[in-house]
Length: 181
Image (cartoon, helix red, strand yellow):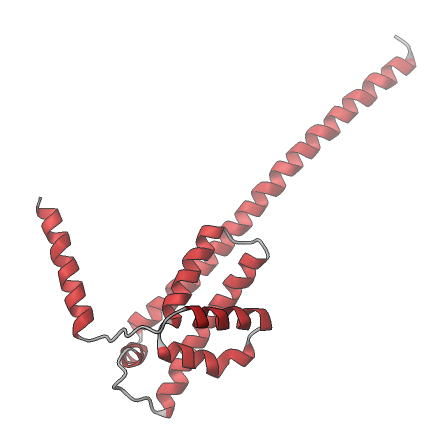
C-alpha cells in the first residue's frame, strides 16, 4: 500500500466521520428545538394558570368577573380600571401566543386550544369593551387578528346566576349517576 493509498483511505474515513458528526448535530438541533418548544408551551401554560388562579385567589377580581357576567351590574371607575388591566393581561398572554404560533414555535393543537379560549373570552361584551380600551397598545397584526375574532364570535349572555348553577347541578347529577352504576 502506497502513501497515496493511505491518504485516500484517511480521506474516506475523515469524510465518514464528518457525515456522522453532521447527522449527530442534526439530531441535537432537532431535540433542542423540541425542548425549546416544550419550555415555551410550559411557560404559556404557567401564565394561563396564573391568570386563572388570580381569579380564584383575589376576591376583588372574583367580584369583577361575576359583575362582568351580569349585565344588570354597573362598573365604577375603579372597577373599570381593574377589569381592563385584568383583560389586558389576558390579551398580552394572547399576543405572545399568537406570535409564537406565527413564527412556528407552537404546536397547532396548543394554538387551537388557545384560540378557542380567546374566542370564549371575546364572547363577553365587557371583554370586547376592554379590547377597545387597550387595542392601541398591541401590534397591528395581533390587533387585526383579535378584531377578526370579535367579528366572527357571537356575543353570549353568560350571566353568573341561576342558569350556571342549574347547569352545574344537572351535570353533577349525571356524573354521580354514572359513578353509581
